[in-house]
Image (tube, rainbow, N blue to C red; front, side):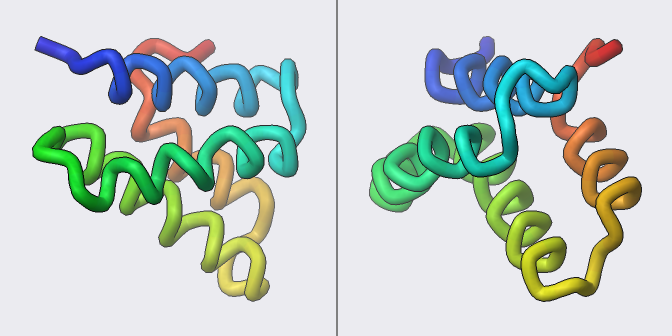
Length: 81
């Protein structure tokens, strides 16, 4: 069963990947979620959030190109068109 936090995380990732929100808007939403998950027992959501955090860091420091960044984020969201 998917937790509410995991569902919201995946929905907001999908919104970014579809172009409905910018990366900056996603990050504004994501930062407090990431902090709240640090002490949560929601392991699936924590795993996804950790992966997103790493990918954003790698993209921000130039390690990942935009296309690769978006492809890898897409693997975290089921059924994104």
